[in-house]
Length: 244
Image (cartoon, rainbow, N blue to C red; front, side):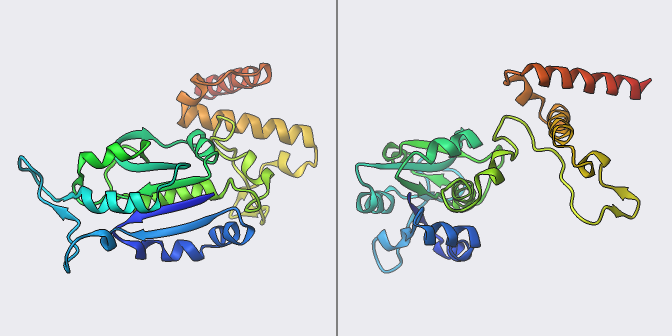
């Protein structure tokens, strides 16, 4: 996959380029990453890329000319262009898998108060990483790239990502490592039993419990298996006994 980031602040991506997972994806040939400085496409010695909004209002707006010039240079017939906006579709793990199907992604990072709406006519979709406001699209771009790189061939073992939160519609179960006892906090006995089936069932029950407590909306969207329905009933019974 080729990813091109269009940004006013290319220096924000320097550390990401040397990040171990990014470097591994590049070395493996799964990723090529290009960072384009939007200021290089602005007119004049001052390279103005923003201006005040027509009709008045607070803040400065990203001008359309530099964005269009850069897009025309980097966009190909196979490119999928994404702009990060507060009104965009909320980014999910499912969307990450969908984006992985593209050979060429262009991530357009806005800044300031927003971007000239005409720029959005040149993008294929708008994405948001959550219901909050950031100073620009650089951090959303980093978020999207990190989530994609984890899924690329040769970066992580497949079993490392298969059981993670959101991959199977549930939150991930709690995990433990050494020491077995830390200041009175014990590792659950079942994880020390060596009994593969008991451990598998415990992990599934813990995933269901955590999802029920923190993201019940995920369960509402899930077609529960017979085992999951049984375990959820056990969880509800356990909760009822604790209350009594």
